[in-house]
Length: 602
Image 1 (cartoon, helix red, strand yellow):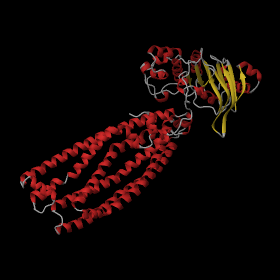
Image 2: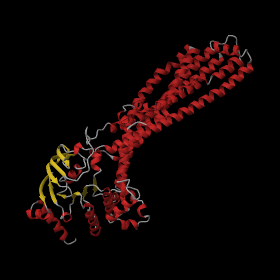
Image 3: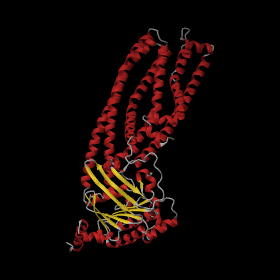
Image 4: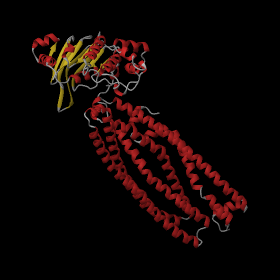
């Protein structure tokens, strides 16, 4: 099994196969045996014709050798020929089984290595990459593209080698039997290989376009199914159906163009092969009538001729499998060659046990150079403080809290934890000391207890129950059909918003980290759910450095410090009461919310 680094550095499928050289070497021996069996397959018939049925003193050296060995005993020679048929068939069958078994094994292990490495690499890519990449296309690369490579290794790699060895061996033997006759048979070979080469190149290009379209279709399906509630809420089923049909139609047209190329190749190969066969039958029959070729050799030659063209046809058909594998490999390498924008620097160390002090020094950040998000932001939050960030939508609040766990790195300036530049610390060691409760609570299709213990898989049942109790979730969990073993629907859709948030709070509690990030934890909740969530949040924030984003300003009155963000800058800071007295942006936002809350319902 290859390491992630080895797979990522592999620049070709050959490099990917290198760790499996033992299995492939045994497979190659099986291929040689299978090729030898294919070559020997017609010879018992030649022996029966030239040595048993119609022996002739003027026979070729091979036939004379057989006759002399068995001293002209026709029954003995017939028994030998019959036994040879069985032995050759047995050797061919054993070698064919070994080759198929070994290549399938290698193909499965390569698929495992690739899928593990690609999935690992995708997870470790920076959020900026995922912000711009379609999820469905990535899913297609992890599944369809890897399957194409596995299929080629299992069915095409050594199978093509068998065909090539068989083809080469037959040509050598045919030259041995009659070189003039062989030249006639091979007259069409240059044209055949030229056609195969040209169509292979065109099929590969078409396959690349087909695979791209397939990825786009998966992206559309994934996007719609993950947002099915929105689709139904706005009655957009017909629109989404038309959108998928349009994508599918484009894919259909692209696929048909590719299939047209593939469909043309086989008939062209058959016509060229038929032309060669016609020439061989014409000239071969005339040579046989003239007595220039013995009957058994002519039969062997004709059988070889049929077998010789079959590998050529198989190799032409293999272009499709090879093209898909090459395209799949290119698409996988495209992802593996993508560098993480947020990387652990050389010499980065594991973060010590943090107390929770956070500092920004002249931090600026932008997702693209044309649109700066943060501009020269500086602030200090002492360990154990509750700091709130408020401001208009798009002001940069979420970006600030995303820089603390190093989801992104600032363009300039320094982010510090306990006085240490976060760039000098390993990302994983930072994030293991931060808990999150986000606006959109993401739960997994798994039992309740697994969702609570997601951030601490080794948590005991007692820890899970205690976290749920502190988060005020224990009561409603116990009432569920199977309690803590109840399977939650995908993304937690089977629970209410307040229930999802309290499970998320329990998930944050069980980690027991010194830093807590809350991003709109009470949005879209009714009054009762909000009350329960904030009671749970108060317990969660106790003794922790907490960064809170909230549009409802009434929820952050108890914050130790409030930072007002506008257009990427901190324009005000202080306690809730002091900011109201200043009469600035915070006071305006608060007054607007109070007015909205007191206005009569329409």
